[in-house]
Image: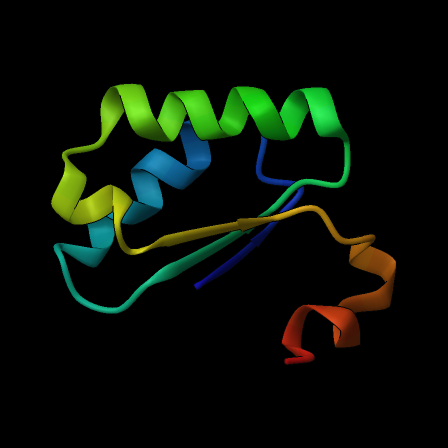
Length: 70
C-alpha cells in the first residue's frame, strides 16, 4: 500500500493493522519534521514485525514516478 502525505501516522497505523502482517506499506512524507514524527509514531506504536514492513520516504508526491526509481 502506498500512503502519500503519511504524517503524522494515524492512517499508516490503521493501514498496517488492516494488512494483518501481509504485504508492505510505503509511507511518503515530503516535510522533514513531519517525516521524523511519522518515523517515531511507527516505532512507538507498531510491533517490530509490522514496523519492519514499512518503508518511509520523503519524495514530492506530485512526482510519483520518483517513488519507484531504484
